[in-house]
Image (cartoon, rainbow, N blue to C red; front, side, top):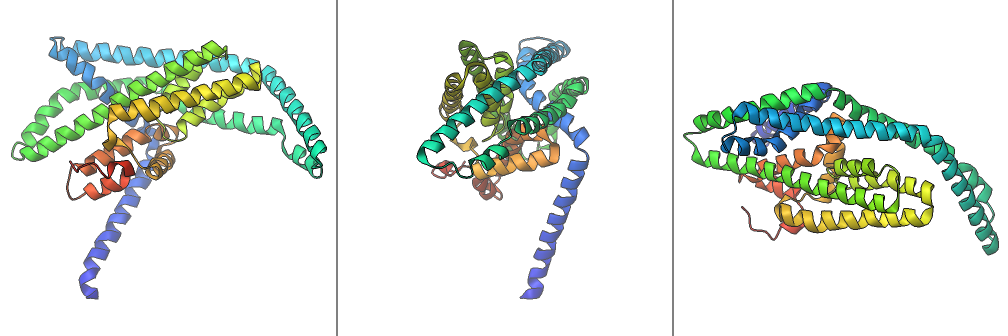
Length: 356
């Protein structure tokens, strides 16, 4: 009867309204949430070495300080290499632009000659006028600068991130004991929570290893081809490998363009083929075997989560969208009431897997 359905409808609308309010607050608090989310991501990565050292009789404080020093050193190295590469690229950009303009003009002349031979010259001039390389380069450079600026703002808060990671690592020792006391009367919940935490840790650790493998392979391939800034493109491939679907493409485009400007279309095609081979090998063979089939997200969910977290938290949200969405999926699949949502989030190839 209608009056019996009203409470459920009101409850659903209330839940939706609450979710909208929470998301609006999250977006408004993005300047605070972004460094915290990045710190949480780093803390999960660092928790295993910290606890491993502590288990081998290294004092807790020393284990945390050594790990923080390694994180800060790595971030400093990445920031230094990136700044040096971008500064050098900015100085040489006019030269690259001239080289690309010359190749572009030569390509248009060859296209015009080909169209003339097949009798398709009508309307070619209008097409040529619309393909203004200078405007395309200016737009692309502006978009890249804005994105790098937002990533740079995060690196400027590296001290805050490092301090937050340190406090999280110190707290991780006591958090386990606190949760054990709180869940003492519910061993099943404690077991599920432990499984969930281990699943998230495994995903982030393995994803980091495969991203590192991708970055090293890209760097070596571009060094062999003699492409400028190979180390920087390797770092970019490592970072963007966390971003599903478009990350590998976004990492390949600038490096392939540099190869085109330096060496011409032949080397550019070889560089692009190398990117494709590396991403297929790591993303389609190595990573699924290490992560397991149950970790996969459906392509639609992966892309939607990319847009969703990017809208809420900016470029860093796009970077962290896979671990954030995978965390939600792991949380849902550990409870029978919400396992159906985890199935919807997962890939179709997991449907023949037995439910855990």
